[in-house]
Amino acid sequence: MIKTISEATFDKDVLKSNKPVLVDLWAPWCGPCVAMEPTIKELASQFDGKVDVAKLNVDDNPTLAQSLDVMSIPTLMLFKGGKPVERIVGLTSKDKLAGAMTAALA
Image 1 (cartoon, helix red, strand yellow):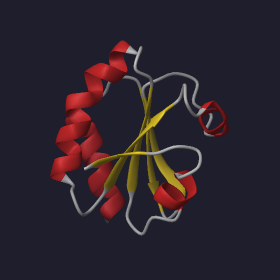
Image 2 (cartoon, helix red, strand yellow):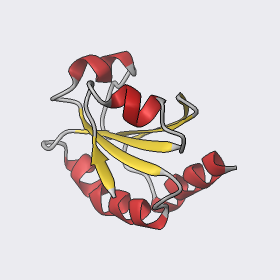
Image 3 (tube, one colour):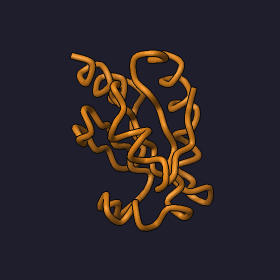
Image 4 (spheres, one colour):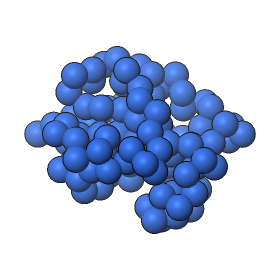
């Protein structure tokens, strides 16, 4: 399941999560963001129960996006123990993301 998060829920849903969390920072007008959608859905299913997957619309949450130093989208950030452990900017492969998610589980 993919959870939609916001500035109001980021602390609870990401920083205080007891599981690693992959955060997809995106916007609906962003072509590469939309192109990543099927990959994100597949990974959410593949890692269900092990890694949480969340989407954060940067247009609706500009303060948080800025505080996370998001310069371009899509930006995919993997958090573990409340800290960012991986940042991938732009289109990326399912295998690269799955590898990062698997590493976060170790």
